[in-house]
Image (cartoon, rainbow, N blue to C red; front, side, top):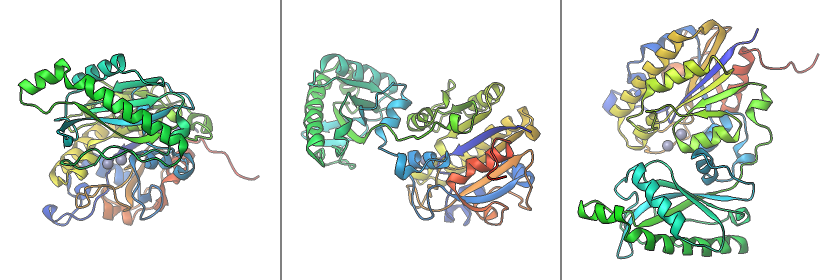
Length: 410
Ligand code: ZN
Ligand code: ZN
């Protein structure tokens, strides 16, 4: 029999014991009646997205969980960001992530230009695209908030290029570094681009207005994360012969989903930030499941709370995810569906970044041999029936329960 599948990734879900939460993790502390019920009905385990002890980026972790070896496929973040904002790129394009930032007397005083709005960033990006001339063709577009994407057409061979982001405020921009002659050319173009863009931005009306309002001006570009086309041997959809959709707001993860063949949907109100409309995502999943075999649902703000070292916020975001999951489960036929819930990596509050800790994993639905676990949490997952697996085995386990795998041998 064939079942449908839903893979839910709560970004940065895993955590470590937190004193403020009485020694529990955020997932253990949070009130999650829906996920706890699913834990009782299903099986739990732990997964290492890449390998134990290796902190994974969101992009490499997602690649690994979708079954790709990130060490073979991954060629930098910028490319996924560019795909994620909807650009169609060629194999020889070189893409970068860009921040609008504030520079005063040669010093970066705000790496996010006071977190300028998406609308402002898009307008500034447009002005740069229209007024800056470079020796190569380029695309420069706003993403979300202070973020933007730069694509240098035909420059992929110069991918061994560094960044000008000093990563801390109160310092001048970093000098772009390069690894070979090809990337040296790219550095020259980037330096020219940054300087010309600075001139366009400095007196743009948006910045004049921000100055009057006492807000940091977006007068500089910090460029990093050079990336070229990932080496994807076969699209996910082709490999598993499924029609697959992704419900995602975050550009980076959207890009990964697009690169492996998913149709990507971002429902209105889904922002990838703390204010994201989780219910809009839940409804989109239920709707899409009518037409698709496999849905990937991504939920970002759990990761942000870990980066912000804000345990209470992480608890709140997990509880919101639980409501989202509750709505999905109530609206579908669970016997004919397989649902997996996990994170792409751990983002422990105490680390304020990704860590190499294993990530909780829950699988529930038709055909699942339930174990004796009672609730969804890191330590309960340690005694679950899945045991401890690598991220790359999650999809095969789901697909097998969905009746989509082929026998090896006679
Ligand atoms: Zn992540
Ligand atoms: Zn993160």
